[in-house]
Image: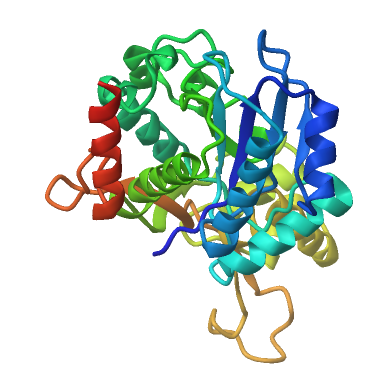
Length: 357
């Protein structure tokens, strides 16, 4: 299973106003970028890039954006941050990274909206594992950035107890101003907020690659994906007690079910009304819970009448559903934030940590 993710980037800058940044990007033929005020003190502009997928096309696009920002005098101070939105669902298996990136840029330029060609959102255990892995090596991650991004009010550290106790996305979400933010979940992303502000394309790109590997490693190497079978019991009395359909349901839910003739005798209903009640029961408990045994399967012959058909409500049914389970200890991928990272990118980050220390 290969996980392809889309990434949105938000670059915060100072020293140049919003209108000037937007005009410079437009004048240089850079499509899809939207520049807006950020609201953070000492931050003058936030440049929002359309979703991209890591590939040469995306890298060249990012480099073009950063080149313009540098040329017009944009600067970074300790209040500026870099926010990356990773899609909370994989792209379709047939998606081509360069094609999606090009289409996404054009779509955002044309509509001011973001292109989405994603599958099903990640199951909660996957997202919880991302939070758990990030928090367990929070001190190491702190060393990847300037000290201004440690315990910063706009990207506060995650809380281990909150992660452990969470049973759904809402409980797992710490809030907007944390290292990982799930306020954006309904908009289709997981926001990573800890990176310090930068207009150096190489630094942004390497953080993007790190995060894509971080998410993909959990999805691909720490969980097993597939169909699971669950046994559920059909309801014992889903209809009003004493009603004709209630009596018919109880007869049908017995070990062998009941024939149309049996039901007519017990309820006084016509054969047509019995069949109508069967349809009502199917709607209530599901088609897969109701079995029709033809009169021939009951040993009757053609010509014996039409009221020997037997109907049965199964007392339990098997349901198949797509699901995930965490891999067993002897197969699960290591929880390290470095797991699966390419050697050259791993070395770049190690050198970065040393330089910052």
